[in-house]
Length: 349
Image (cartoon, rainbow, N blue to C red; front, side):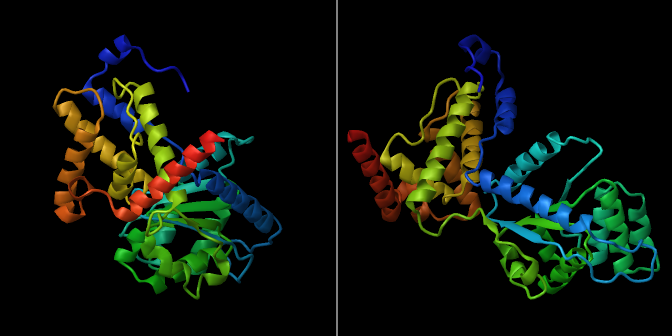
């Protein structure tokens, strides 16, 4: 990481520019290593599986079941940095390609308008930059196996073996678990590509569906535990410290901010975020917007409290659930105090 900006350099940054810089700052999620390893492994497994497959061309009448591929679920609450983490991994993979004509993995953000297998196939054809997407969307004669075979042929041309479907829970607003499972199974069974499926906890029933159970790999769960644990607290506090250090180094704030300097602050931080790392970013951004409106160039707990309480009111969080008013939960304080005691014990050895 480069050296922190000088006072002169900071003075030249407008508040708007500081928020722009804020939005570019990225701190790795603790699961990025596992995500990186699982995605790379899935690409290699899929490449090995499809390289030895003898598929008929797409224009043949029907496609038999060939080379079933795999589904990797990644789920967790909104703000858990799932999308940011997968994009970092995909950028790394694409940047390290020896052959620039190869596109081993593609990314698609789906939405509620994708209700059927056919509509999903259309979106995938669009992702593969195929002019055939419009024809499939409007054509009178439709064959699911033929469409999958054409997708597969186009994917093999670019050596694409993995598709990432992000925000997949949005599909469930307009379709059923059964229909979604059938569409995904169709792509897997016809050897089109393996799939990384990303979404919120609404997707959990999908991964247990009988249509997909045998093809689903062990999931990556970005959820926080229902109650604070030592591991979840440590992950959150380390993430917060790294993020705040980057805010100072990049010139977003003019003085360092330590959000975990006391047991009470640690406990409040955990309670307002629910242990979800991405919520740190959301609450701190709101706090900076408030601070900048007051012509301040720092981040502090006064701004965080105001921003959180304003957001909580809009979100329907009652005042007795606000840790700034009622204090942090006793269970959170207990875990944080245990972490503090262990750190002191380790330091004294």
